[in-house]
Length: 117
Image 1: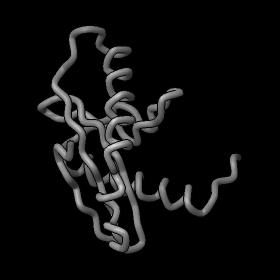
Image 2: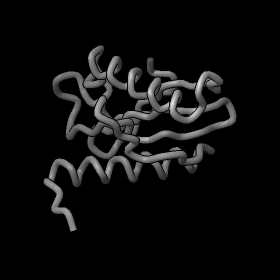
Image 3: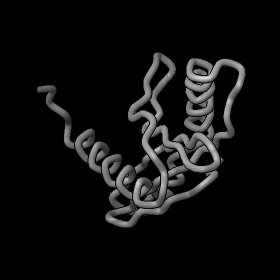
């Protein structure tokens, strides 16, 4: 078994909670930790409107802007590039609609930001 750092374990737990929350709200899992050399998408989900790329962030508190604010412009660009690669691989040139959501945890509180960027 691969040993995970405490930070990685907290991130895994946040992803587990976000996944359960999203499934409870009608989304279905397509892929978890979709990775390439460009980066990783935490959760790829599907809802009635199309594909949903989900970034999960967790912070102990709202200091330094909080979890949602940590998805900065550079991170958004990386996610968009990775999503484009994922969509091309899966759908070629016939993409379904998609959006980017953020599940931000501050302590135990979850904020789901649909269409975050």
